[in-house]
Amino acid sequence: MTERDDPPAPGQAAGSDETWFAELYGQSSRRVLGLCVRMLGSREEAEDAAGEAFLKAHRARESYDRGRPFASWILTIASRVCLDRLRRRRLERRLFAAPVEDPADPPARADRQLNRLLAGERRQSVRRAIAELPERYRQVLVMRYYGELAYPEIAGLLDLERNHVAVLIHRAKQRLRRALAPDAGKASV
Image 1 (cartoon, rainbow, N blue to C red):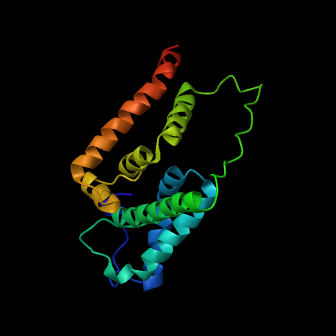
Image 2 (image 1 turned 120 degrees about the horizontal axis):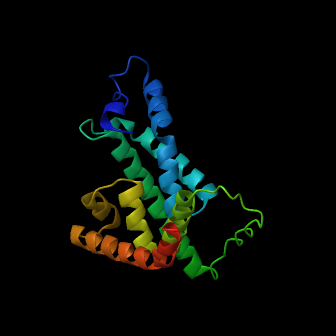
């Protein structure tokens, strides 16, 4: 969603405030959900987080700054919701028990389709590699590349200096390159 795709701000739409918000939801729900899935790692939890983000946005719709793109506004809210959930998850792990592991992925089918695209495989490899990154690296990469947030926005969300965010992103990319290096030979076949 680009700035020109943004729905009009409250009070500028021909319909009601609810119509304005419904339009905003329709235009940005997939992108918000994608950000939440990548940050949280679980589709179920991501759906809850995306719903919470839209609820918070709806409640704060009057405070929306019209000079800022809607996509940036709603993705910032969603990032904060996800960060809160990740913090809460860490606290619960420390307080209660060992982390509960997700069930293992089902085994790969022996009869994989022969026409599976290499690009699709590479995307999956990248997603797995991102999921395996330490949380601090995964967070900044997802915010930057999937949430399309700028370094200063990420720094504000994480209470870090902009330069620290740049270092974290650089280190995250280095780890990704190392994790994906064995796959590099497969892509050229």
